[in-house]
Image (tube, rainbow, N blue to C red):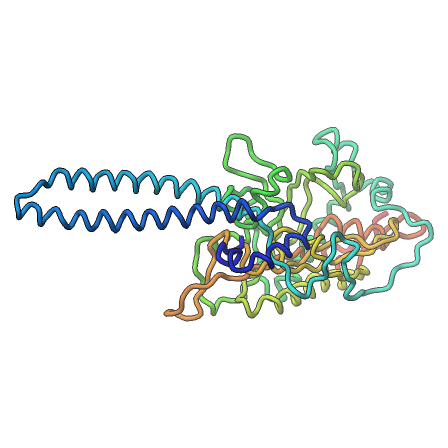
Length: 421
């Protein structure tokens, strides 16, 4: 969430940001409510001063035998006005906060400006694209090998769900464990978070109120299934003040993720690319303002490292202003090569949210015991999506006889199995 004072002092800059992001948010209603709020505050302060002045006269009137009751009535009437204004102020502040929660984060100067993903800029590539004649898609391979079943999953749960079977299930579990072990060995604290969070948590990371239609809400409860472990992990320190000596703090989290995929009809309806339920390893960091951009670079490197260990070709792109997520100030996407589609597909997004989420979730830090608390910077990134990694392994490691080799790094996690037949 952006600070109202920042918006007030930098209106032209914020309007440019909204234009760069293709946002439909309008600032006029925000400024109208802010003006109302400040007017009410001034009225309340004036009335409180009047009430204090008149209250002091009561003692003097008593001593002089004057008309105390009329002054008491006047003080009471002023108090009633203050109470009414206080309620009006709460209503205005609530409405203002609701509008502020819908304003996206500012965009860093190093982000390319553009309306969509065609303005994304490639930063680097890693790995050689394999030469595969007539490559099969991962879902064709999975069905032929008997390790994936989407038809029965559709019968049981609906579209965009998958049964992983036998060595397919083992492969997915191997990828999860490999990712968690690798990140934990590189300085991340391992976390298994709750899969259900409350409205405050969803609001803290920016999923609510803007993206409510993409969430699965539990009927009759203040509870949602998480779309990513970013939500519980970022809210871990909600409403707390941390010691700067703790920073940066780094979490690696395994979780299942649940997304309604609203508006995704017809897109990647087969296979593991776009599911309502999928597994993911998430990286989350807390950092000081001066650390956060360096931590974004290292997080992106860490996400790429696990793909390199699996021998999967990928590239890194910096997203344009029109393609970035709501809470992010700068995002790198890692895109893995998918032979059957003959293109790179997103497998990780690594973002620096600056203090945007911290303001919503009231997460601060102190540089020393006497220092004023400052808002922390939060970062998140996939480290990486497990199902998409399985899809990439199946396609990049497919053999001409229909079998699939297992990357060397995963063979110990597969109990020594090196080929899926």
